[in-house]
Length: 228
Image (cartoon, rainbow, N blue to C red):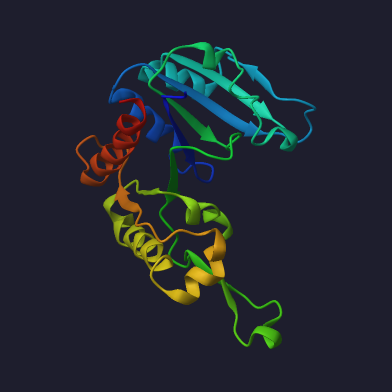
């Protein structure tokens, strides 16, 4: 029986995913493995490497990961056992952190690290396709935030206090997604869950930031619930 927690950290490039992984690793809690996962449909089969000079892997090691790997996989390996038979997974650990694309299709905790929006940017957009038939434009998630709707933990990572108000709007909209019927039906529908999620604004580089502490506490609960 699998006892270690699997935590997936998603988000657009430059949002702070690796910074969140570093924070998890630095917080301790037992041996933790970390993998940078990249989907590459040009491959015929999944591939595991651990280059010493790879930037994310180097940061994982420095933050205290007990083992690291770069895992690249094609679409036909999504949801397969390819990741579980890697050399990385032969190492003992209490948790495995997967940054980037998700090769498993499931995890114990799905985290989305989001950037603060620009002044003219919003979480929701309206699609006008088939507007006559539906009589209203349907809501959708803006492309840069694709995947945020499925996360159980959302962290809007701000670089300065000037971004906080805009970050708080993203958090408010994430909460609205599960409360407003039209938004829920348009974006989540039958695949969604109304279970409340944790959504915070945080400066992930500041160890004293309250949002960062709350996000890490939520991740540690997932780790404890699986490995205890």
